[in-house]
Image (tube, rainbow, N blue to C red; front, top):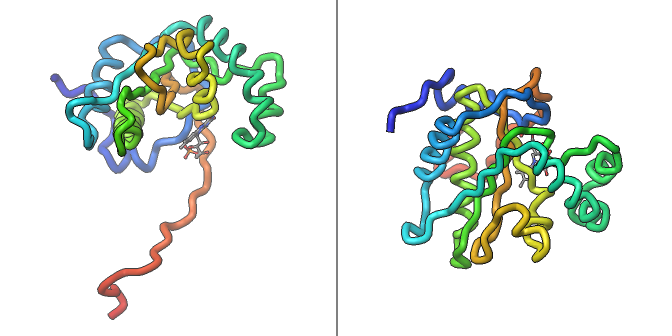
Amino acid sequence: MQTPQTEMDIFQAILARRSVRSYTRQRVTHKTIMALLTGAARAPAVLHEEPCAFVIIQDRELLQTLSDYTRPLLNTRPEIYDNVSIQVSNHPDFNLFYDAGTLIIICTRSAAPFAEANCWLAAENLILAACGMNLGTCIIGAALPAMKTLELKPRFGIPDQFEAVVPIVLGWPRGEARRVPRKAPVIVNMIPSLLD
Ligand SMILES: Cc1cc2nc3c(=O)[nH]c(=O)nc-3n(C[C@H](O)[C@H](O)[C@H](O)COP(=O)(O)O)c2cc1C
């Protein structure tokens, strides 16, 4: 595969990445998506026989409809969703997918240990590669319970034998994403100690 043009090196991308919740209308091309999926598929994986799989939805209207279907579930599961997302979901313009043009759902059909870990590692590869191309992403964990219901799973295009693990929206960011302050890494032990 030809390496896609990126704007930053890997550590710059790690530091620059933010969850993006506002997107322009500019479409992400098929070629770019294929490059991101190739990057995702190169993540560490325990199950070579059963790699994670991808559902790609590039249809804003459908995503708004799927958001509308999901909205009632957000209000009935306060143990999963914090008060802020429940309040936001009551807003008439609510769109769980932030009106992004693309939703990528990383799925697995394996129940083996670490099958989900494979998907999360693939997700991080995809997210960082996207950031390196100046694209924005946001994990939409709030959509997962809907994607697992018998009624909504097929509407998200997830085949019977697969389970959704990581939904990620993708698109060209509109403006700067909010920076969330992070704590310094907690080192509970270091052997041998650097202080010796
Ligand atoms: C498992 C998981 C689920 C998440 N689900 C959502 C979600 O449903 N909606 C959302 O806006 N952000 C979601 N996020 C993004 C987090 O809110 C975000 O990563 C966090 O606030 C830190 O901000 P940053 O990603 O900009 O550093 C999720 C993140 C993770 C890791």
